[in-house]
Length: 350
Image (tube, rainbow, N blue to C red; front, side):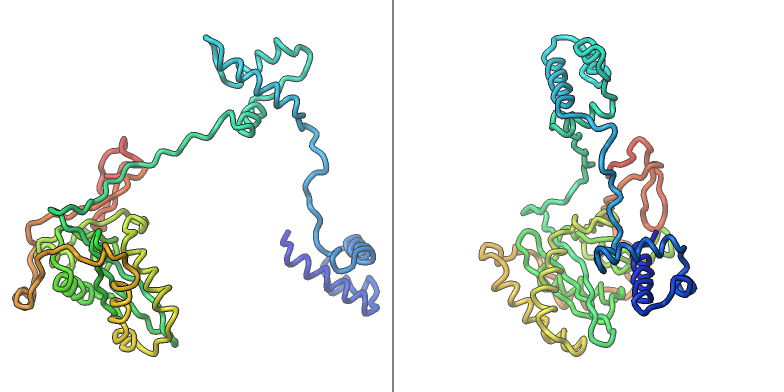
């Protein structure tokens, strides 16, 4: 029964009653029985409009409810079994001890025994073991950056994309504002970040099409991947649907949204682009802690090196890391294709 629609029918029936319509005429407009109409008319006379709400269907008494004495006895037997030098501790052992100690009294069921033990804290649910997932770590010998994008809407519908790159652990940032997230935009942001923040050894990012390429063709490296390999950057793709593993840049997206986007009104993408340096300066000077404001010294991409990049980038020798969760069949999704690993590794990360 849909409670919302039922209340609508009840109110309508009472309004028609207050207008003076007969029961026969009311039931022509409301598809309900005479008994139903009489019930809610009587409820309205006693409680008013408040009486048209459905009452709780919870039973007033429970025929199989056990007393606190039963609970104490179960817990006491359990503690005695724990201190015994030999024997079992489960519900069946508690039932046998109950029958010996309290003959002639109804023995509680196994489900009740476990419910009482959980309620009193004797038994606690086992901790769910989270599968280990390797995470990259920034060191003086391994410079690590994180990249992501977020989108917002201008008045009238146009989208604004904000690409962010963050150095780890220094938290220095580079931002690119664009009306799209095409591969040229993603590659341009990567080149600008390498010029401003330096060339990282590793770059952590998610599996968005702007980075990992189209979802239609299998086993193909995107231009973004080719560019990163050409620059000597190891790409680290986090597992699908686990954005929290790229939490450093995800938090930056939230800071940009809460502290910048929602506090201003922008007319166009160009307006956002002009205001972008204001956010970067505020983030660096005000938001970051003083100990984080000095970025790690790294080799930067020069303008000459950028202009010397070939138009058709080859697949350069390098490393790409894909963190994936093995499904129940022992498979992982990689480069728009299914790869079989091992069913014994189901639920684990590789």
